[in-house]
Image 1 (spheres, rainbow, N blue to C red):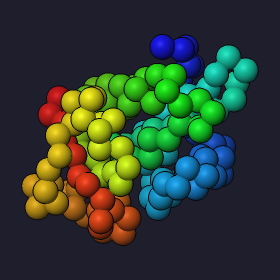
Image 2 (cartoon, rainbow, N blue to C red):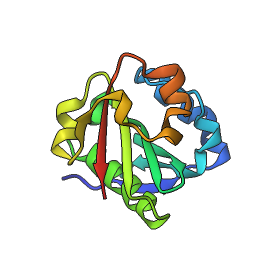
Image 3 (cartoon, rainbow, N blue to C red):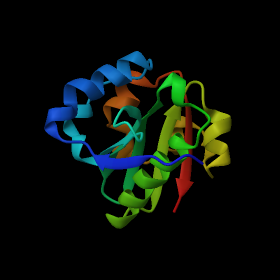
Length: 145
């Protein structure tokens, strides 16, 4: 696995972060509301190689916006980012993490997420912008911590 430095996103990163997500065909709705829960991965040159974040709903979290630059994929950066996000969420008392995906179900299965039906999602997550606006046709997954 290649080394990536992680840092927490700040308000000065919002524009670059939303552009990064757009470039990777991911939704940006609600990002500004949970910016403090985003991590940015940078390589040894300081270039952004990936991002990941989560929305906090009490003891439940919604993993969102996991993206790795196309030239940096398959180097372990995504896994590092997901583990950082999950670890941070766990430190805030989260016991269950949900996500929605249209293209990465196999990837997240390898990270311990199980496919679930939309009706199995906790009510708080069902009020999220991801659930109501973005992921209507996506597969939902869950991991118990």
